[in-house]
Length: 428
Image 1 (cartoon, rainbow, N blue to C red):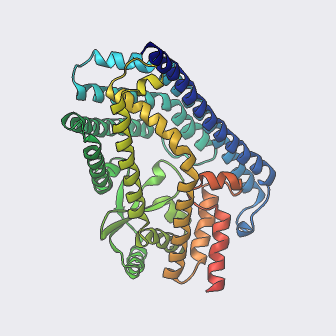
Image 2 (image 1 turned 180 degrees about the vertical axis):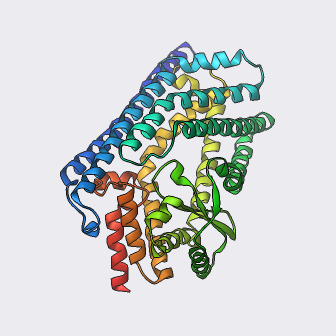
Image 3 (image 1 turned 90 degrees about the vertical axis):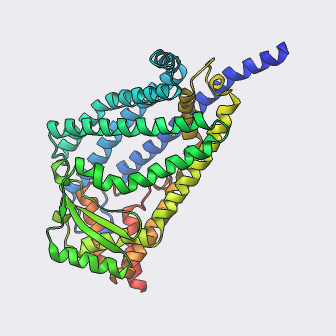
């Protein structure tokens, strides 16, 4: 018996160092990919891709390269800082100390969990403030993207924190109530609860949360709005409203998106996009987005996410039930929610090798949506022109390393995407 206990006590510290080693390997691989991408940009950043000839001159190309490098530098610093904080928090004692301090506030299982996650949320928000300020008022300002003010930035921070805290407290309390009420099958009930919350937020966010940050109004270009509805009708989509949003109050970056579930949907166009593109190009972009809906990409992604969530809930139930998880990290004891934090960390390590699969599936959907847009509008030039403008206006990296793009990119590299769009029309 004593020999078995000695063996187990020896395994636990070994498991801790194995987990740390796995995390360091993941971080090293990320850094290697980042370096590979930057070296590739340094070698090819002066070259104008064929699809961008006539649109990109050397000064703009240099600005694009500088923007990519600047973003990468601050991203690297933020990534290393977050990694250091995470390793210290999980492996050097602060997690156990924090868990104990929360226990002194309440004896309630649910209350402990709510205080625990709210404290971490506030801490993470505070730690992120310097990076957010730098990105907004230094980096984005340097490249003429920022249009925000300290007042708007601070208001957004407070609203985001309050809304996030309320939602997180409610979700945490609901999930822990189910754990407490059904200890033998909580994984299924918690999964169903989280799936319901996801669907509710998809319905409610566009009408309750987003208007707290942006001003929405009907598209001022009535002819364009009618044309959008006609094109979407040909795709079999009922569009309730075509709206524009005052995104230019915060940034010059541009975008457009669909919201809504079911048959009734809403299109939102950034006012910056309306300034940068003509009507044909906007129709091309929206036809692409319509392709995602019509081809079922939205519900397929949602279904895949829920299957992963279901699997994750069952694994959490199984591992938490064994009671050995704290020992893997060198702890004698941790609360239920503290162990959930450890599971989240392990899940991030386990899912990292699946990143290229997720990226490939997303890129496949983008190719399909491009094909749909060409079939719907009967031409590829408006969408390809829109992609050129989006890339130029947003200073997108035109020379990502193939390995980096394969691993991380949810969209195909824009040069390859434009080349395929042009090829679609030449073969049709």
